[in-house]
Amino acid sequence: MPSPIAESLAGLLLVATLVCAIIRPWGLPEALVAVPAAALLLLLGVLPLSEAAAEVRSLAPTIGFLAAVLLLATFSDRFGLFEAAGAWMATGSRGRPVTLLALVFAVASTVTAVLSLDATVVLLTPVVFATVARLRLRPKPHIYACTHLANSASLLLPVSNLTNLLAFSASGLSFARFGATMALPWLAAIAVEWLVLRRFFAADLIGHTEASVVPRRPAPVYACLVLGLTLVGFFLTSVFDVAPAFAALGGAVALGVPLLRSRRATVRDVGVALQVPFLAFVLALGLVVKALAFHGLGSLVTHLVPGGTSLGSLLLIALIAAVLANLINNLPAVLLLLPAVSAAGPGPVLAVLIGVNAGPNLTYVGSLATLLWRRVLRQRGEELPISEFMRLGALTVPPVLVAATVALWISLTVVG
Amino acid sequence: MPPVRIVVWVVEGTWEGCIDAAGRSIPSGAQVALLHVTPSDVTGVAEAAVAGLLGRTLPGSRPSRSFQDVADRAASELLAAAAARLGSQDAELLHRRGRVEREVIRAVAENVDLLVVARDGDHSRLGPHSLGPVTRFVVDHAPCAVLLVWPDEPPGIESIPPPPPG
Figure (cartoon, rainbow over the protein chains, first blue to last red):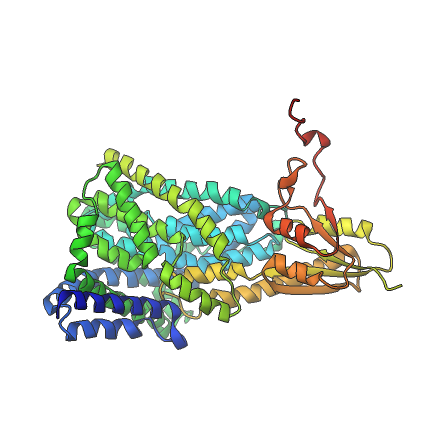
């Protein structure tokens, strides 16, 4: 097949894959279009089998790692970790909205870093909403804090975001080195979010209630201990040269076994929490993007993206990554950009991550999907306050990109 | 003559002061309704974040559904607490969902004589920033009389800066 046709077909299938994953017509699983799309590209020879096999080999460990992290988050929830965090934030805030916002920032940043952004979006945000409602405070600043930090506070560790996991193997960094280099950018991103949200929502951060309306809950000591040890395990894997996925797996087993034994979770729950359709989706998406890159887009991206580690190059890389993440979506964006930057060393790879992780706060799912998806939302009687949402994104994303990238540049100079 | 109809807009963070002020100013025999609006956009933001995960939702987790239950319960508890604070058993309790500023205006569009609203902006000084954007819209667009109250002690008159020289 001639390259332009192959390229267009792969591009079309990429769009179809993403749109179906977001809109989910009739509630169908996200893999339903992605897997046939990848199969079609293989059948037509758009993606050569050898290329596909190489891509599968490189993605498989990442997907295993992701599965373990998803289990870790789900099991922590079963132990009541997030409910306990909600009660702790309510008590600690003493009913003051700004103090509560500070605690939400601390908890959301930690949860995102350790248990991935999925845990913050799916498990923590509803708890924060319930806590704010019980305290009779206005929910908006706290909910936006959760959704924003799920993206911008996912810079710290390889486990914090699927994009990080994908880049982790390409960066050639150890788990500990990754964390040490990204600590400063992570803090810079959180600080910028705090400064902007605190001002943006000043009118909603008022009032004062008795914190006693939220009952105290004991912290799940065992789950916290296992998570702490898992975190230590992640860093130790660097010392002993073991894949960090094993630390995540160890943590998931340590949490899962008592749950299964006490029948607080069933084998079926474990199967559902593994999210096999999503894992298949990531693999298929990887193949579709690979086909797109193989027919020329890859070399175009390589030409476009600077390879150096000067501050200017890093800023430009982060900007390109953020724009691409907003145009299509951050997963295909990182898959497209990684091959172009991985040869240039860890600096450019981490700059890509700043762009694809913090950038989505402008549109969350990519602009194309946001447009379509707003319509779906309206049919359900929900509303996306697009102007406020984009205004807040426009106020936070550029300074977060700049602050985090400058921090990365300093980190690279200091940590090396 | 029909009784005076008054709507008190009850919002988290300012409702106590608003109810107290309303209690002091409402004439006897007035028909009072307490209004709370649950913003529809908060759940929209949470749903957008879930969509951003491209399908990685955990079992049974559609935030909007759990959000709606929580928001509905919180709204009815807030309205009940407001009615109790007002000491009025026959106050009508109105709970709406939607874009807050629009729903408030719609609720007072017909047969309402007075809307009671609390300031929710900058508390540190007297000035135009004492209204948040949503409250600003309501005050600007209300088709009835508006009683604008401070939710707590108002700042002193000295908080107004002196006029520029000349």
